[in-house]
Image 1: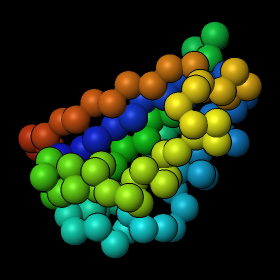
Image 2: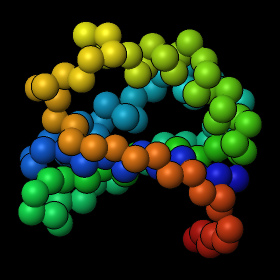
Image 3: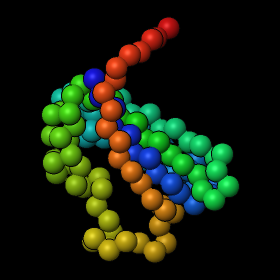
Image 4: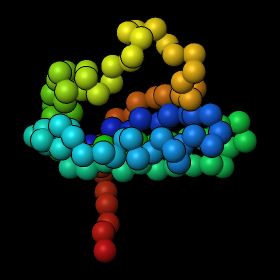
Length: 106
């Protein structure tokens, strides 16, 4: 299993408002190898809030199929095409892919 984490820095006060957008039911749930999404919010930083959108996938191949799909492109399209939106609350984002090496559950 792998996790794909999108670490997103947003303007102060915006993370809690934006978090539900990343966990809405949709086409993602129909993709082979998809397990779940968790949205974590941290308000500990003075300059920004941080959201970690953690997606759990069976393997990188399954994630790659999602990433190349029309559903992914539709979910990530910008209203103004490719130009950055100057009013966007997003400051930066970084994708981190990691293998689940160990886990414990209740």
